[in-house]
Image (cartoon, rainbow, N blue to C red; front, side, top):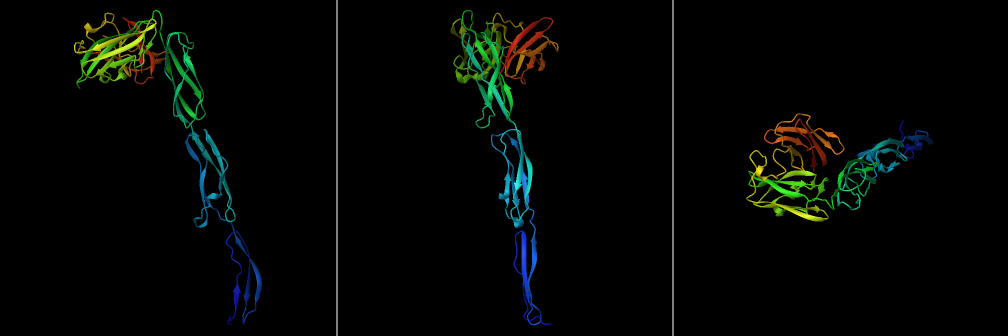
Length: 396
């Protein structure tokens, strides 16, 4: 039959969860009965949002770190504002963050947890070098820091000293001690030098061994020094330990620590003249020694050994010696014959033996490579059938 005049109304539309009740009607028109106010349920379930939450992995930087994430709904609607986190972490080792997503009307709530992993930062603490003269009070010990984050200060740096008792002239090793939860700490020792002072103190004596010309047109001089005191003498580069003219040679070639006994060092310089001046204590005053190089200075032999005419009377070529001292890496002992494997030992001031590379060079002697040991005072012990001797060497 013809449905002329019929019509229907489906009622309300729903978008959000959980839907609702729709009341529909049907008007039958000419040929059908009306159906009035029928009710049906419109059920809309909450959707799952697309939630992505990440933790954090990094090195301690004094900054708070927490979880981060995003949340998106139907048609890429941004729901990130529904994410919350319960905590942030600044210090090592971090921890666990609980996150929650509030889905509101149309999305299911979600929760979970992620890790915040904070590793320790690297920190180097170095005791600062100190130098005083005998009779002065123990100086305040200070430190240098490499790797501190922001305004951090390690907890209460302290130090140990070897020898442990501060008593007169000599070299004292200062080693920092520190702990901090957020740092992997490397502790670097340095020295407190107490120079001899007063009656009986001897000044540092200097002299020239020989000179030679380099292929590049520069020259090389081998200077020597004698410390007649029973303890090392420290004279820093500068107004009391310098070359003149200053532009002729790099001052970093100058030794600063002079152990008891004698030593040598090599200097590359330009020009025809060079003088080395060192001021040190003699008795209760400062005394100066100047040694110069000029065109008439004695020449080194081709073998690299020092010409006999240029050597101090108490340092003849037959005497066993180590040079250069101080050194930045390698030193040579002027053996005439190759020593046995175990006849030369390198020890630190605590008596620990160091395994170092030793190379026999017939033209000059036994070369000892100290490149890989830390800076400080070392003892080289020679124990052969002919000789038993200990050399004090400064590794810079």
